[in-house]
Length: 254
Length: 269
Image (cartoon, each protein chain N blue to C red):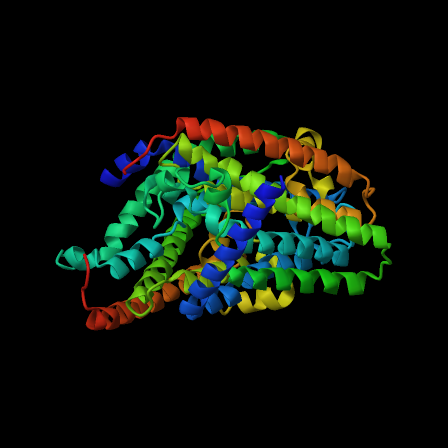
């Protein structure tokens, strides 16, 4: 609630972030619609699918995504985590919840834009929901958000070893954008990228929930098992990294 | 006029040496960014490869013409990243007094405040982005097998220079809002999103959006328009129209800068 109050105090930023989120999506949709021309579909993706995919990607960022690795990294670098280390919970949770407030406020601001987006493209849209699909969508979104959270936490923890974490963060973002299907649906990408994506966790963050939303996932149960597996692996990696970092942390500043 | 030019050159030289010393002190960050920045190009290259698996022409552009377009955008963007962004990105810090300089101090200097507050720092690591852009454009040019007239090449380079001015105008137009909205944080990210419109063909934007992006506030000057001129998709005489547009926009920005100065009240000193 405290974070939400701070965010609402700086409302202009919410509008700014909304523009940041919506402009690239609009350009991607316009590009794909131009490519489609008179065709009704491209490898199973209709106009409606492309529109929903990129709208879904924009919205997913406010549900799954965010960025709190920098905040963790800054806390370690400046020594402001010193006080947090005495508390009975991990500092990562502190930043995670602060980020949820930002995401929630941004999501609210984004909804009118998304409705506008849907209105502009209303002639192309068609979608249907079933209870099973909704359940799978919620489950995969939740697991995707946890995978994303662990990546952010691991990246932030690198500040125990590096004074600046933007280099690994940038590297991670490019990889996520490509292998996470943010640039384009993975099934339309060059085959080596699609194949490689099966061996990496990034497709399970944003791409899987969107595939389920669009009815493109043929093996949801297997993918959910993979998500759970990655949650477990990343949790262990985070614990190891955090403990190793704390051992070498000298708590200067703060 | 010559007096201002002389001041500008002396100022640029002085800051170039200061920045060079700074880079030599922090070599590891210089090299990290030098190698990480071009990595972002990979995303667009993969997008180009993805769309050309589905089509042979994207709004009148072949795959290799798209490489020329994207390479052009990267050259302009990389140059601006080296010369314009490092200083302009500190404007909000200057105003809030968080930087090692303060805007109040800038106002007391015998040099134009806009020039001093928005220009002077260099980030030489951005050169890698330009190099990647040049490599991508050359790759596209070699494979597209087009023949170019000298005039198209000259006008291409001149239009890219207008693209640099457009970057400055667009970037500062957003950054300057911090004079009125002191807590506004995402101006960099907005500009990063908006400038991306320049690496798609001009024909993608139709109607009112096309008019704005391609003519009124020609963001497309940072990539698509120079590429159009190089490839003969636009007549090179368009350069003169864009020259007038950029001059008008620059004049308007200058007026807004003076308005911003009137609005400014020292935050903390």
